[in-house]
Length: 256
Ligand SMILES: [Ca+2]
Image (cartoon, rainbow, N blue to C red; front, side, top):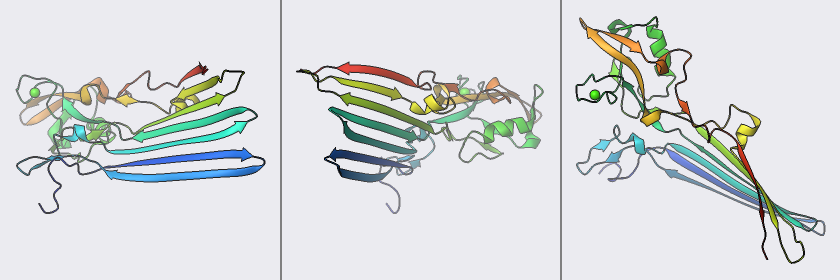
């Protein structure tokens, strides 16, 4: 077995969770602070070892969890007769993996969207349509793709979408009112986006890949014709419209 992971075990990546609870109870001028923090780190990763002992670190990257940080916290205090709870949840995680593919059926298997992109050397390719080899390089190098190098075919799912941050916030106020005990709540989801429209954005590559270019070959030289996604000034990813906005809801709960 050596240093190889056991079959089915994931290899790389990490997850970090931080739970932080603070209770602040003001009782007769005495501050009682309870602080509890735990940190947990786990290994996750890419690649699954098959029964024949081969670690498939290419085809299984869709299962890669990457890195994830989760932080949750709550803060309780009394304000006159009301009990107030403020709580938040932060989740940050590596974006999903995706592939760079040709548009067209270069390997002749009858499917036009499954052929992994060849990253050509400058001498091997002409980039058509008024674009340049450097435009292609700029697009590729901005893609967070592992092992991308001229003269090689991309590995499936070796690129990552952007890291995703999300922050949710909740306020709950519990007020005794006769025989009732109404609880008012305000939830704000994706609060980062409330303060800065550029934050809290969730972007994705449709069907987990991007079709970069068509390619034709003549006399040992390729001609690449870039699709819109690879052209300068065009968006690389689609945006998840709902998850990329902040949302709020107010609530009232009556207990009796
Ligand atoms: Ca194909």
